[in-house]
Amino acid sequence: MATSDTDGKEFSPPTWKQPDGKPVSCLEKIKVLNQNIEEIRGLAQDALEDAVLMGCDEAQIRAVFNDMLEGLKNPYRKPK
View 1 (cartoon, rainbow, N blue to C red):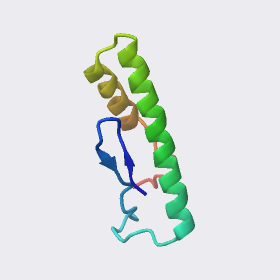
View 2: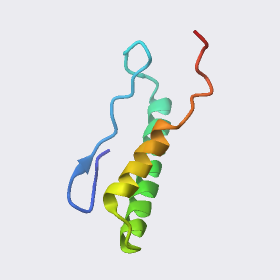
View 3: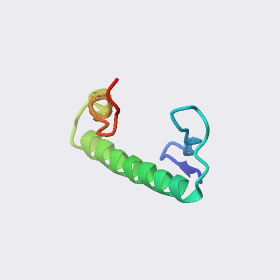
């Protein structure tokens, strides 16, 4: 399922992969992952538009988004 940005760029969810590089094959898992990414994308788009309308620098809000994503923790990571 592809969606378009306001500037016409299309976004298609990726082929979801397992840690070993093999694609996720369970259709229900793929459906949930795609729904999650679309919801996050929609919220981020709304937040970007709000920030720009309120006079914020677009590059800064994008940097904040990137920093936020980089700061997410994986609570399931196995200790080495």
